[in-house]
Length: 604
Image (tube, rainbow, N blue to C red; front, side, top):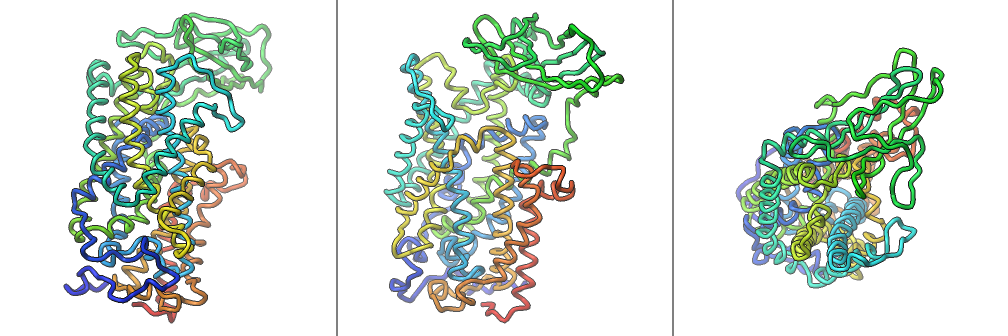
């Protein structure tokens, strides 16, 4: 790859009129040199505003739930964000040099019409994230309402939420839409204002956790509870079942629960308690069966920890009788077995922004400013805030007397701070969390889809209209279901869309650096019949490269999402899915590069 000359390295400005082009509108015009005013602190503040959010806070805690210890979780997050910074910076370059957003950049590789494929795929993922963040912000509003009117009753809805949660969700949605209508500069203003506030929130949470948790060492030691199974059930002999529970202890190492209710069927009474026999709370409970079990007998046991009128959620474990004794569950998983699939998920977290980062760097003063701003703003912020989430969640296991089982820990700060008894503290906390969510949502999850939808019909869909479409799709995706569980959040959602976006990143990067050596014809990006028209406006090589990059990951995704039986798919293909972003990125980059080199398409 030849190096750019000093002239080629300069920022390029469009010098011809493109206002009549059907491929243009003022929102996706190249920025003029005088419009490129963002310095490294603007870029860093943008990343602080995006990275400090509730999903980031929940990341490390989610990794703990997958079997990692605290330092492994933080290390994995840090490495994942250093890795994703590489395609992030590579894709930033054309944005800064040519002043173009991602949908326009992708015209060079996919064709002026084929660019709809990557821009809409990216937009749909952003719509999902917009919904998730809006749901979280809505829950903050809901917690405030509950704090002021604790006796208020809501109607349960068929969607799996209640009327109060839906109204709060729609209220926060309306706030987002209001700022979207104000335009891109209002988003920039919000990010600069919110960044220091968000850092302060994180530091206050950290101080609270360390102080009330009895010190950082004690809190981090308690984080090991997340790596242990909540419940296991094993036959000791034909008439004895041994149930092992990870019952949480207070700061004096006393079990917090008073009793444990055990039953063979998941029957819940009107009072919310499991119907079954009560036993004094203990880590191990031996149950004698009325009749001897026959070999091969299977059964599911349900447990609930209680104290006074407080109760845990109901947990269950299955047991099968074998004469030799059922194998005991392992209390840990090999780090490297966990590391690579979870690393893929961490890369997937910002695989979205690594594609459409030109939407922001088109406003940067220079390449140096955008590179240093991103380096300052992304990896350390992600590691820092996820570590705070880990510490606060672990401290909650010690601080709150009504958390009896680790799966009831307040994994997100909305639930954590909503436990405060002081109404003013709850209100202030929820306001701060709403600001954090709003700043992330508007920058990370609105700009990309708004530009993507605008690119579909530039003369009919503006940035503002694209943002409104984003909001509507975000509602329809029912985001509360996307984050209902760690399995769904990490292995289906994060890794799933990384399998889709990795190939697109590989193609865009290969086109800009390998095929075109960073040289683009800016006017032709806005011409229907220009050099990026290809045949019918679509570069078939790019489409084929996307398909080939996605295909190896498809079987693993279908198994993980529950659409296929794992027994029908080889372990090799299921394991490939754990590296979805890397596999798709590499395959598509190679296929596209070779295909373009062998084609007769113009290369600059």
